[in-house]
Image (cartoon, rainbow, N blue to C red):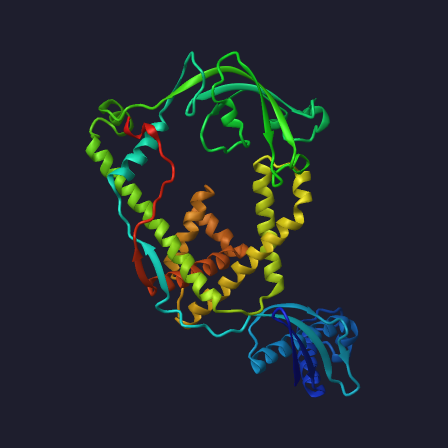
Length: 452
């Protein structure tokens, strides 16, 4: 068998294969014999149909099966002889030929796994903050716990930061109602009826909106000029000034409950004390920071090894991952209220970002797969069963039925591969060289109510 492999960029290769005439004849004889043994034709006993009759009756099927066998055998030999790590057969050239010497020639385009040499991956240096939980950390979490039980009471005074303002407004652009000049604009920019806004020093709605409401009282009307940036989500309003004509329907004070016995027993039961509550909160913070530290460790070991390697990636895998990420980005944007027309305008930018993320993800997957191969890392059956059971529970499906479906539709292989990569990453983390640093501040906000 004559084999010539032509390597191309993006982990592709074209295998040119020529099967000698004697091998073609041998395969054809085997296939014809099989058809003769299994043919059921009127006037002939099973297994006694003449070869000439079989070839005449099933000629097209015999030829198709012959070519399929020759292609499969040829590709297997090419993989073995050339040491190819084939991910997928992308296609077989339609111009297959049966030459005058009875040989058979064809070409197949292959997607190959990238080849690279791993750098040293044991003892990767990482810097991680020590885990310390202070009384101030506990106070901060307790404040947020108390805030979840906050109540809002009507007050007869001007609004301050931390108050809640009940507001109605209409949006205007250049003196005209936004709903008329831009009917496709987001509804919350056109008008709002009696919505609650919690005033905060950090503007997370529209620039200057909260600051513009400080000092407003019930019954007041106020015109707010909102300057929208060049990166505003709704493109037609980028760089424009939107005027919100607002009417205050009420001002409410945010009342955070005191950390007293009544509150503590309300959330934890009669046996809960401030001491036991603080101990539970301390443990929650510790676990949260351990998770954050583990996440940082994973990011550092991956970045360290990925920065030392550059290699081609299979383009079709990158494209598939990029499409998946593009779909996810678009779905999240639609759920957040971004108009579909806006997504269409940003599709090139979204695709570019998704493609870059996909390239990084695919690259890391191949690196972790190679680590798993080098270290003989595997996935235990118990680990696989547990993972599938967890997925079944999240989807609220019977475990046994879900596992049968996962086996049939190929999900089991995908879950196994994901677990293998997780195990390889855990190996890198377990073998990393950790340098502990001073704890990093977890919170940037300051609440005057913390001492309340």
